[in-house]
Image (tube, rainbow, N blue to C red; front, side, top):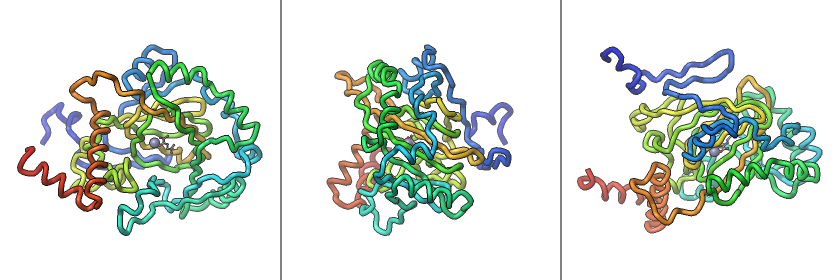
Length: 341
Ligand code: OGA
Ligand code: ZN
């Protein structure tokens, strides 16, 4: 029995997922603190971003012109090129890397990938509204194949603010603007990315859960050479505690992101993003930035971000050197067992 006052600090003993009828959202039993929601100019927001902590920013006007975007407008103006649309049998869209599929014999793709024109996507979307056996998620980069109206909108994003932030936080190059258009309830399950992200909500609302890089050992990412690299192996709805015992100690943050708001997702921070099941279509735009140059003088002890980075490098090196994914674990075990304990 737990002593009085001990309960709150103890990890979850009985893992119970609670379904909220009103919102259609599931509530998980691990502790979640609120991500602060602040005007971008608030000194606390600046402090959080300086320390690579998540924050929901208001008042940035970052993608103001995109707040007018609708599916018909995009259909008329995005151009005739093909775009990536994922098809999943469940609301979960588990990302996988095509280039790593051959590393895993018998790998079964968790979702299908299609290249469609925007019109085809809108058409298919209409046919999917009432289906519960298949869901669609448009995920494609904004490139210069878009028509003049969308180019005009893009040019009028708040680049001055962005460039100020990039300089201030010493980030590297902006690499990607991903446009995401999802059905209500679509889920991007928990994963981390290797870049900083200003995640902009344009239409509909998303529930985000975030976990700091110190949760690496609690979230059990797939091996780096696996197509699902950077994704957790833990099923939040039915965790296998035999295989993933440390998941009991996972602890994170939570927020809702609404149109016009920007969520800062720091590099290597785990995140779960979900369109409200009882909301409408969601539209989001990402701004992914590389990290800045490594400082001349590295501070020790290494922080959790740096530990994630070196772990990835060690795994990559072993995978390359051994030429066989099946040999990586035995070698790592050989290094540790009976020695580093
Ligand atoms: C991201 C991300 C998924 C989503 O922006 O890094 O994982 O469903 N987005 O919005
Ligand atoms: Zn992500």
